[in-house]
Length: 374
Image (cartoon, rainbow, N blue to C red; front, side, top):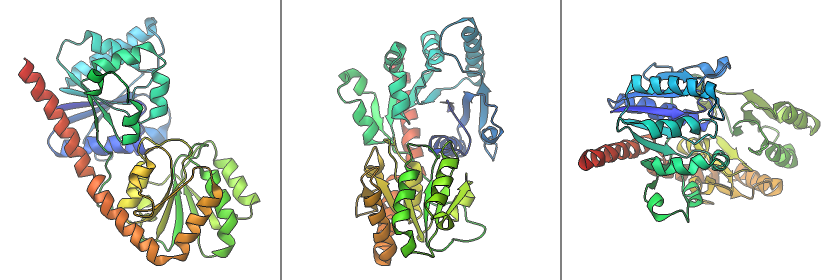
């Protein structure tokens, strides 16, 4: 099959959505498919890093438009040319971003090649913004299959007309069962937060929680991995709260660097304040056998079952988060039990192989149905 992933935005190796798209594309190539990613141009050199093994072609176009003016028409023409040049059997759309749905709508209206479409909704907030555009609802009706990466996202579409709901299915995002080995080995017992540093990810709640108990654990360090608009504020907060000596800001970590932290000696914390469509890093931490703490919001309780494969706390509640951290630091047996169950559950539900199997099966089903109808 020739599979074109429409991914806007796409920043190779940065963020759960982009990392999953990258892995999916690579694994599909390894299974013998011809795969490309079409995305927006960027001037950020860090995010211009393309797939490291060059298995997947990345097509970067200027897709930034909000209406059908003459400039948008030119850009649309270039987009169609790029799609026709690749000549995909399947266009796999990742999210419906309001600025880009103009091109998708025009392409789907004009296509006469029989190209099939599938859309994965990775971000509910982006979808809500896109739904403010009338064309989004019309676009959903033209897509051949819509995928939710969690029951949480799927539940958002409850109440839609029955015909449209028949096109929906749930496929969990996947993570590798075997992560690349760390060159320096695992570090001793520690806390880890890894996400973009913004108001929605809950880093300030975590720092507040850690400030309440860290003096009881002088040998434990909290690592904050990531970058974002809130980094300077968070660093100042850590310093003024007198916990600076037990907090390390690492910046973005590569996958290999991240693997130094993800282990059974890690307590991974994802205190999100806004509903996560999936929570890829929480699944990765679970696959690594870490003890995981997440907020009771969005899809995170699907990934972590409270007191079975981790601990689930109230979002924004630094007291309950501090209690959960303290419980795991004080109870090695509980840490080990939760980490072991997390790994088993991740292997059963969230493996990359299982996710690729499901997508590949869906592609084949759509192509088979199309051939039968012809």
